[in-house]
View 1 (spheres, one colour):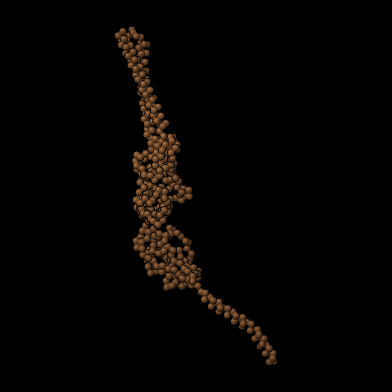
View 2: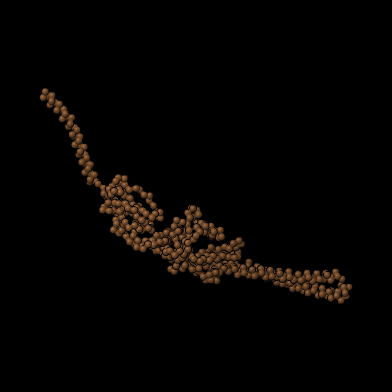
Length: 428
């Protein structure tokens, strides 16, 4: 009986032994995993920045092209072959200075021809005047004789014929005089053409462009060709910038403008807004192109992006700026002094872990609600930021003022210069 009991007991111990060994192995694995997790535990490190007090400006960006404030296009009123071109691009010219000469040979021939025709016409007039004098004498004699003979001699037909011949001679005189007047006008016009063959500068300035060479034929039959473009004064320039319709409502006359050009990347130029167009750029381009072949279409009409032209006048005393340069402008539409500002990055931050603070002050799984990433021009009057309070991230609502794309003004009084505003998180 004891043997049977012992056998049963041994069998039970043999069955429990694998279970115990398996349990021990599980416990050891759990301990190893726990130790490994503790050794490799990641910690979130929050990068923060305190708000600061400083001036902030809300800017509107625009691009544009520099041009002289006043340019003159010099053309030719006559057709012909260019005999000489006396100036080149960048040359300074004075008012009345000869800048090109069109060959006047044919024009001089026209003048000589009209002079000859005029002399011939005057000779014909003299002959007509002699004929008039003869017809007048003949008519007056017939009339006198007719009155003395009481109509007996000459006959009425002879008297009437002499009268008509006299009147016809008078009319011929008027025709000859009109022909002479016409020839004198043509002669004066030919002399003007000769004078216009010498092309002079209408103003003091600098040659910006030259589109002709000696020997080239100028055709002015249908429109006046542009031979030179002269800038009156390059020390005064203007910048015409295109501002998008979303920003044009912020732009006012008198606002400060800071711009730069590619030629001087480390230098900024300042000016003020002088004019803001009411018509959009596509309308302005359409009007100019319909009245002048030099008008160019605005890119806004091709891409359906509506923009408005903003004109700025610039002092260019050092002559660093040149016509045609592309400029990137920043228009300061609003400025706040001594504002409480934070980096704009803080409005876009959200924690990377799965813990967010609930309304009761504890933590709940799920993380903060995701927010769509917006540009600074789309920010509303309120927003949300995360701050570090006692080492714990906390989400708060703030009232937003103006922004320049890098920093944003905070109007709320729930943060100050000692608040730790979270910008980003790093896992260590």
